[in-house]
Length: 61
Image 1 (cartoon, rainbow, N blue to C red):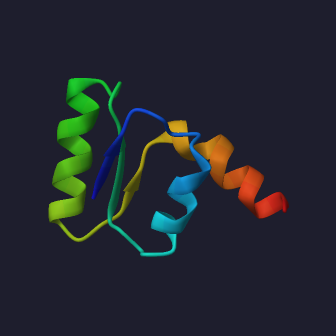
Image 2 (cartoon, helix red, strand yellow):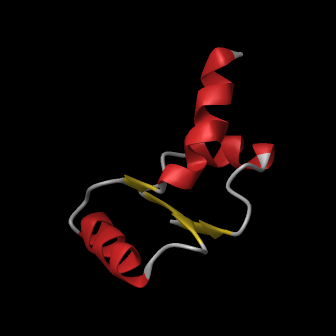
């Protein structure tokens, strides 16, 4: 899992290639954070929507 304050930092792209299970943004709502952590503990993946712009930009390259 990773926790970041900068979901648009291009350095994060290298972490997406590591197949981490959770990508959390520090401004997540507490309830959303708890649900996301539970998903990760169940073996699911979670990517906060704040990472969308970065991921879409990387796909467009």
